[in-house]
Length: 138
Image (tube, rainbow, N blue to C red; front, side, top):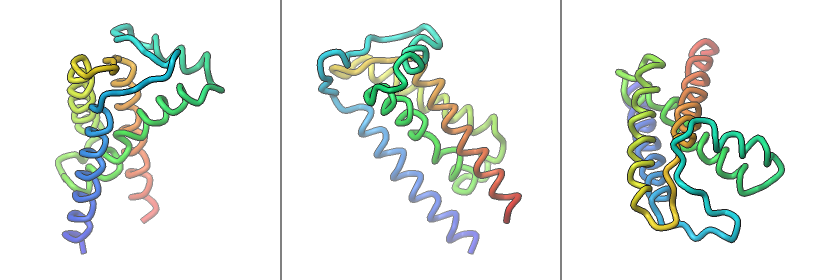
C-alpha cells in the first residue's frame, strides 16, 4: 500500500511539475497593461497584488504562483521521504522556482520576479502544512 501511494504521489508530482515548467517557460502573449518587467525588489509585485485585489490578471498570477509548488509540499514527502522536513521542501521549492525565474529572463514576453519565488515557496509551505495536518488526522 505504501509503495503504491509513493508511486502515485511521484507520478502526480512529476506530471504537475513538468506541466508547470512547460506553462511557465512558454512565450507569453500579454494584453496591453499586462506586461510585467523583471523585478529583483522583494515584495514589489506583491504590493501590486494587494493594490489590485479585484483585477483578474493579478489574482491569476498570485494564485497560479501559490498553486505551482503546492503539490511539492503536499506530495513531495510521500514521493521522496527525504523531504520529511519543512526546510528541505522549502530548499527544493526555492531551487526549482529560482531556476524557472532565471530561465524566464530569456523567454520572450516573460519576466523574472523575486516575488514569484517568494510566493512559489509559500505555496509549497502551505502544501507541506496540509500534508502535516493530514498526518495528524489519519
